[in-house]
Length: 282
Image 1 (cartoon, helix red, strand yellow):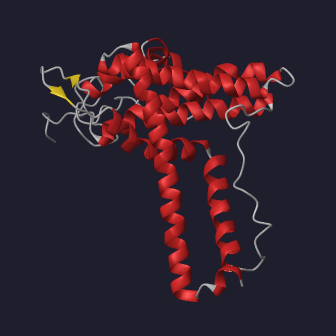
Image 2 (cartoon, one colour):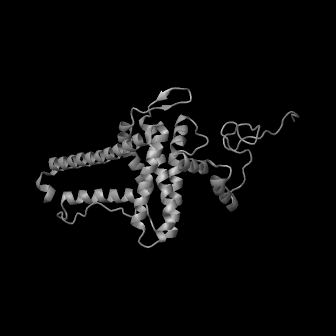
Image 3 (tube, rainbow, N blue to C red):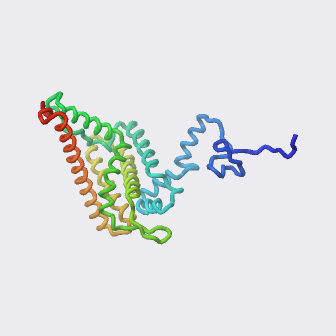
C-alpha cells in the first residue's frame, strides 16, 4: 500500500481539486448539504438579504441612481448588480404574488383586448385571422414577462435612433455609443423600475375606485424614471432628456403603427394571392 496516497477533496460539481472553501474553477462551495426545507428557505432569504445581495443592491441603486447604476453595469461592473432579465423575472414574480394576495392588478388595470370582430362575417378568413391575432395579443399581455420583453424589443430601434449621438465613457477612457443590445438592457432595467413602482402602489389598490388614478401615477412615474435614466446615463440636461424621451415615445408609437400596417398589408396580400379577394368577406 502506498503511504504517500492521501485523500484529496474534489469539487462535487466539476471534479477540480479543492484548496479553499470554494472551487477555484466553477465557484461552488466545497461543502454541500442535502437539500432540506430549511436550506430552501435559507437560500431564498439569502438571495434578498444574505450572501447574495445583488438583487437588493440592484433594486436600491435603480430607485436612487438608476442611470448611474445602468452605466456602471454597461461599463463592466457586473458582479455587484443583477442581470436585467434575471431582475425582471424576480420583480414580476414578487409583483404577481402581491397582486394575487391583494386581488388587484394595477399594472394591467386598463388593459383592453383588440377590437371585437363580431362585425366581421363569421367563418370568413379575415375573421379567423383576427381571432388568431387576438389570441396572440391576449397571451402576450396576460404574461407580464413576455409583455415587458416584447415592448423592450419594440423600443430598441427608436431609442437607439433618438440617442444615437450620445456617448458614455468607458473605464479605459474611450467614449462609445451604445449598441442595440446595450439599449435593450437599458430598456429592460427601465421595465424593472416600472414593475417596482407597481409593487409600491399595490397596497393603495385597496382603496375603492383608485385603480385609474394609480395606473396614471404608475405610467407617469415610469416616464419620469426614463427621463432620470437617460439624464444620468448620458450625463445630459433635464430638458434635453425630457424632450428626447418624448421623441422616443412618439417614434415607438409610430414604429408600432408602421409594423401593424405592414403586417396587415402582408397578410391581406397573401390571403388575396391564395384565396382571391372574395375570400376576405366570403
